[in-house]
Image (cartoon, rainbow, N blue to C red; front, side, top):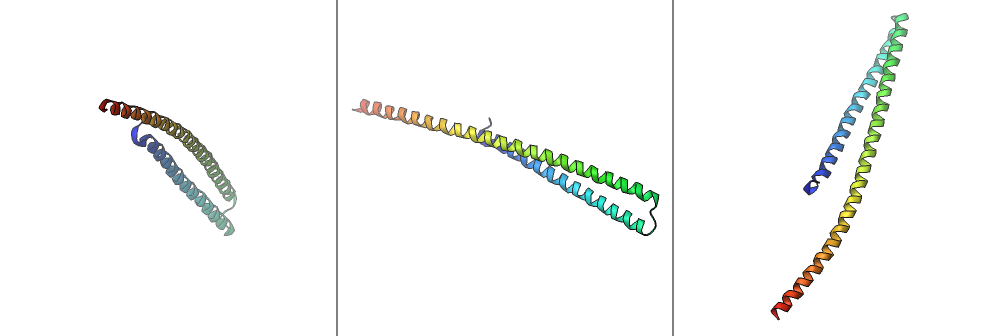
Length: 129
């Protein structure tokens, strides 16, 4: 274990970095979804103007495929984010239990040290008397 809580800070930094990456992925996926929606709107407008025909159906299929792909990516990201949050929560619980154990150890060590100091004080008082 590193002194001064460096390990704890490193874990928190890693969790923050993972969150930032997931937020960027979400923004990218939202942009892709919006782009697919706009492409569909353009295709629908083209079909309404008589520019579509048979290729329009193929384009709609491609658009739906792209939307499905984005949905799968979002679902994968959501699962990954949920797993990361669970892992961080488990790490926090583990650290809290370790901190509790360390506090108990500190208290017992302080009591023992206090007792030793009292004995030393008594011995020094006896030596001077």
